[in-house]
Amino acid sequence: MDTNYIKKLHKDLSLNNDPYPHIISKNFLPETIVKQAEKEFIQFNNELRNAGGYRYGNLKYHYDKLEKMPPTIKKIINFFHSESFIKLLEEKFNLTNVMPDWTLWGGGMHSSAAGGNLKVHSDYIFLRKKNTKRVLNLLLYLNSDWQDEWKGHIELWDKEMRNKVRELSPNLNNALIFRTDKNSNHGFPDDITCPNNVHRKSIAIYYYIEEKSVLPIKIKMRKYYTTQWKKRPGTNDPEFMDKDNFWRKIKYKYLPSFIIKK
Image 1: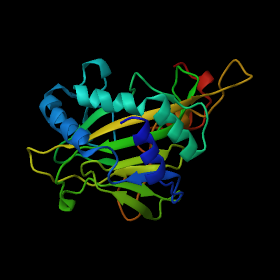
Image 2 (image 1 turned 60 degrees about the vertical axis):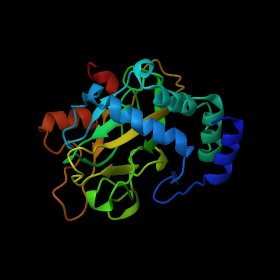
Image 3 (image 1 turned 135 degrees about the horizontal axis):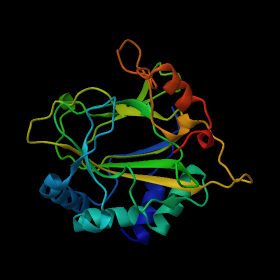
Image 4 (image 1 turned 135 degrees about the vertical axis):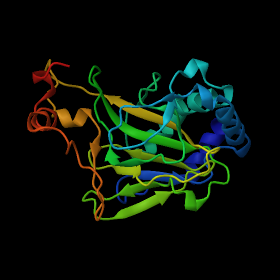
């Protein structure tokens, strides 16, 4: 994964704007590297911690300590954080001054067992204690011989949540990169049905840009600091904070962040 490989990615990767800007690849990294990463992930799986904190998903286990990750996975993440790879992302998505998140906040190694799911949602856009805006997600899947009947495909939905526009199997070396905003609706909403000895494994990387403001206080609606859940038609899926009491809905959906104690 050197300069020549970056050139190959430049040639192979193409942007699709439906339903929002994204890139899908089914042969993203060199095969020997992703197979080794999968092997190391399986051996490391017991180190992953329960993610917790998701009201609308039986989601995953995760691990975000880069310095302690298996060597090939660390190598892959370092490549995704490299200046040359970020330059590629900037050119493909028409962005400037994109920054990696070396803390891997919310990202890193993700793993879901049978019964796991993540309802359709759009991610938080702003970090509460940093002057940064999230602009891109990158997901790389590490699952050899994943069967379609096990479900677990990542789904991309349109802004109005009327149609599923794209889906991608979590099979080995499949990758998805997409712009993040309040309408980048995605998830794997149905319970996966893989065998008990199989996990849906992925590496998740998030990218940011620095927010510039002339004001000493960031005045943004609180909803942009948290996940927004979206309801698929004909389902009992949750919607954004639909189980919260009236004050909490007002507080988190409409009030600027500087009004509320963090």
